[in-house]
Image: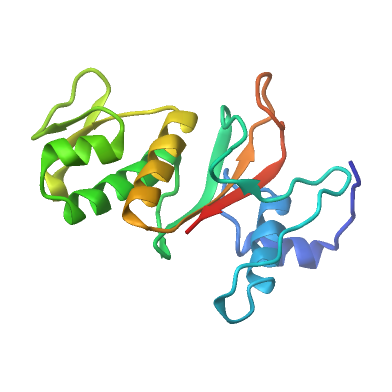
Amino acid sequence: MPSIDISDDLFVRLQKYATPFVDTPETVILRALEALERPNGRAPPKLAVAAGTLPEFEAMHPPNLTFAKVVSALWNGQPVKPANWNRLLDTAITYAATQIGDLNKLRRIVGINIESGQKTDEGYHFLEDVNLSVQGQDANGAWRSIIFIAQNLKASVEVSFIWRNKAGAEHPGKAGSMRFG
């Protein structure tokens, strides 16, 4: 993997755009490049795979997201904060619930365990805005449900992430992104 040296002044500038304990210089640079490659709101061109870099991944055929930490996320163009897999899933479910009134239809669209009302055992958490309880998911399960909701409701989703440096991570220490819609 190539390594670069940057000045102390540039490092301080990068820190202004970083989320402490989340971002690395690489993830901040990745976000800056994404912004630069989106003139007039258009999606950036697909990047070819270069040695030591990762392209944008196919949202419908994602990599293994085990140990992948969300750096930033958008649902229908709106930032999801704080960004993590389950918060993005909650945002998608809340959106779906506002579009679909029937709980049984909603269950088919969401594809994971949801209950009407408040339930906090068995890994559920409560979404007060829509009076639903949702069972938490790992990163892979959350992304499957997010994409399923986006497909069915013609919504858009974007996520940037970085794999932790852990055994079992598909690309330890590397960043990636996916988008749909």
